[in-house]
Amino acid sequence: DAKTTQPPSMDCAEGRAANLPCNHSTISGNEYVYWYRQIHSQGPQYIIHGLKNNETNEMASLIITEDRKSSTLILPHATLRDTAVYYCIVRVPGSARQLTFGSGTQLTVLP
Amino acid sequence: DAGVIQSPRHEVTEMGQEVTLRCKPISGHDYLFWYRQTMMRGLELLIYFNNNVPIDDSGMPEDRFSAKMPNASFSTLKIQPSEPRDSAVYFCASSFGGRGGQETQYFGPGTRLLVL
Image 1: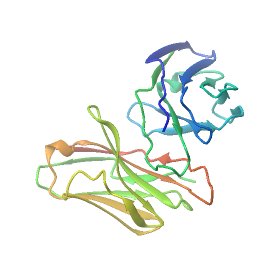
Image 2 (image 1 turned 60 degrees about the vertical axis):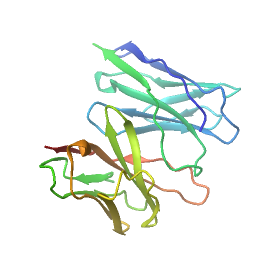
Image 3 (image 1 turned 90 degrees about the vertical axis):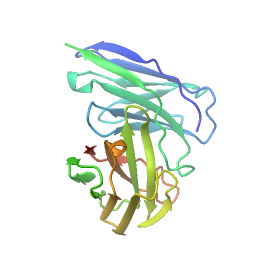
Image 4 (image 1 turned 45 degrees about the horizontal axis):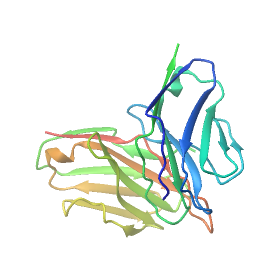
């Protein structure tokens, strides 16, 4: 799996959009970008994934640059419950079953 | 769907005792994973199953750990005998592989194990 780089921490005001960046400059053509988060004392939670097109679901939007070397997870209206560690993972589906979580970004939503 | 269900949510036991953790995957999922999370080592994959068959158990720490999946809706992770260093949060996750599927792993709430 390609290596990813994320800022260690970010703050966001409640109600504002949270934009979490991820660099994956060595991503290969068949690797997808996955985002998970882990709220304190809970299991990791799947958020969204994509290959090259922007994706949106009920939780977030994923913007992948045209060269696919970086992406941004957007939480459109952050709430206090979105405070968590967010992980960006790059992998080929089916290539290796283990999800490898890096250090992630600690997002703190401030009231 | 209720999601991945794990029991117990918390377990406190004494060194040397047997511990059994249980997991019910999401219905229809054909992959099941057992992970362990500690502050020191982060999230580690212990073992995973495909269609109830263990595929990779290279992450199982030692012979004290064993895992079974007797049917598609149930799996156990057993530690016998338990040791203080086994204290961790154990997560079960499941996914649907499918043909060319983009499997996404869904995690349970975890079992917080403390071995005294």
